[in-house]
Length: 317
Image (cartoon, rainbow, N blue to C red; front, side, top):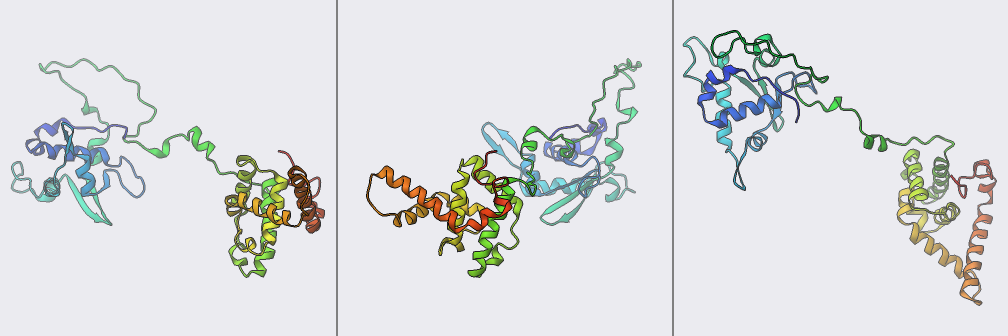
């Protein structure tokens, strides 16, 4: 909490000064917590709080132990501030309303407290400075001080400039010609075709392409996945009898990427004759895998979106 409030010297002569210290502490807490201008439905001088919040705010330490007032004690203070317990300095013709320092209203799990005459005491006035010295002689003219640029009495987070971290967290916008957006569209078309056969197309029909593009960016840039391998896994998983109904988003694809790659390689390996060294078998496995899926999806590669000029997979950034 930052900023300042005005505390009038008449406080020393008021009845609250003769009460136990808890009364003044609660009163000052309310002054510090009150809005100094209209903000989120609260008027100047209003504070939305609760009895537990007040208890915690005015607690104090005794050594390493923290002492807290009871609920009854806080209720007694609020009753006093509402004017219902002020008697010693009230004239016979004054009502509770005239002597009340606050008014209260119940809100949902909260207490709306309005400080009476808030603006009369919190607006800077000429009579706030000393007009005389203690010996009755005119006081010296106080030195003018530089006024701060921010005249808010309390901390207003809305006026704070965005820091560098907020700029870093700014949401990315992917245009239609962005490679990751194209990846998202390609993946969406593939799963929609198989989702319709599995009767789950309603789960992916209204997918958010911006979120999907962001997931593909993470797969490529953060996970360092190969784009050609990524396309092979997409083609294989969206045509698989089991995975086609379980991989319905790039986020799930990213989570299961390693498992999908292993299972895809195992199925392709089963179609390759045994024999030869392990190195030769791996070379044949990769070659057969890529050739098989290129043949199956040749129609997609002939599409201009995935042609040599616009192919999002396998291209460099």
